[in-house]
Image 1 (cartoon, rainbow, N blue to C red):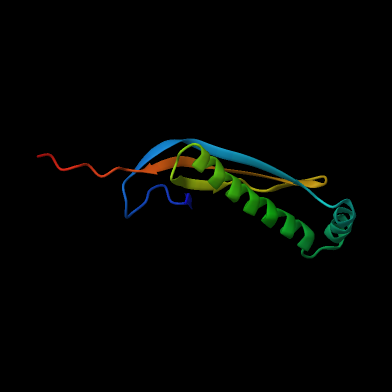
Image 2 (tube, rainbow, N blue to C red):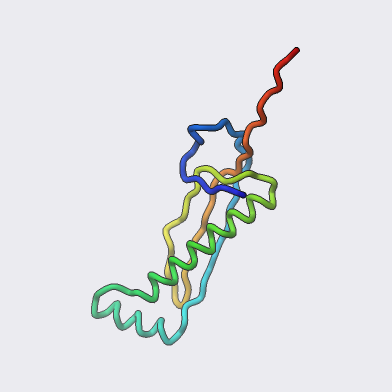
Length: 111
């Protein structure tokens, strides 16, 4: 099981830090809901459609980051960061990244 960790190190286990692992997710908005959110933007208040769209994109980005790290042979990703979600006309963009890591192998005692 791959782990995603926002800390830069693991306090309980030594790790070997690898290269950067990153993903980009761009999710399209529903056009009808997009128009409604633009009207709500003019009037003020929360924008639940965009909130849900951003949450879905973040969840997708983290799942893909985990899968990409595992595909590259890492045990997980440390220092996980999510960029500020950018809502553009009809879509939201999120970039997730961090450093892949492997758990350090215990050294065998010398005889």
